Image (tube, rainbow, N blue to C red):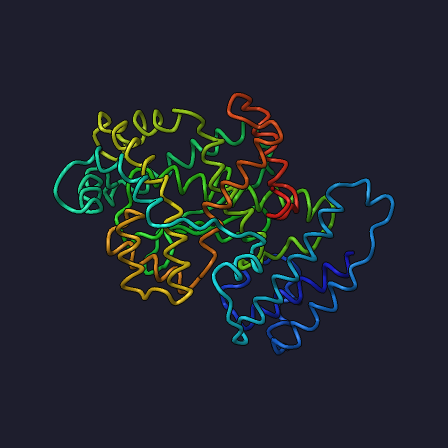
Length: 406
């Protein structure tokens, strides 16, 4: 299996020579990366090599059959290679529908919802924000009171990160030298990004192109940091790379089933770290004063945001329509404004995300829902917070696939 794993890593690095976004992280042998750069294998050869490698994955031994992680490893490598083949074919011009692509790349397919589904869900928000203007304009006007001033952004994020880390370390044993740095950037199609660098270190970038609202502090601190991407990658490095010697986890192909697990756990981790009303209370008592915002408005803002979160799947529908050619950029922007409550500027930025990352959008909301369902099915319900943490961490440190969450 270790030979298969090494060949898998080299194939991922080979695809990365044709797709700058494909290799999200790599901290394996430097000479393998150099080799990939020098060879620049043709995509058709990579596809064929991946096909052959899948066929060569050996049958498990009796000892491996008794080791759940060893069995998961086999399924993981096979499915990741299948996804790699799809990406290589797409880079050669293969055309897939939104759902075909998400199944092939991410091992999952998001549900389809009609416009009426979102319109019905937005009725309560419409009542909460009365007026004659379009609902998205009323929502945008309401949110203006909750923008974090640029000169307070760093202090607010630093405090949010510290709280997320404290809460995570109560339940997760991390290497003593783990750390990350934060940079503020512009001109990106995403709002935040974690670049894992190996040796338990990450670079987290926050995009400041658009206004940053107070709720994004916890969102990004948890999602990109604790107990999200930074913790996920650190646990994989500790438990699978260093303890077991599984070299395949030194590389992270972005357009693969691994991303649904990564994004799903990062989003669900917010709820795990801040159960019930704890997030709203921390934002009100700590972050609002730091940002110079009125704490008396915190509960009202949290109530509105909870309603908007319910229509997150509208973003999937916009991407499905746009990528299938049913709508153009202007129509997709209008859909996002009407049903996902995105301002026209933010909606246009989101369509640029669709251009770059395509069906990747399902990994955030469907990923969260599948992770939540998996953890709760194993007893990790809100009433059992310790069990929830245990099951959540066990998932983070495993090579489980999206199809294995159901």
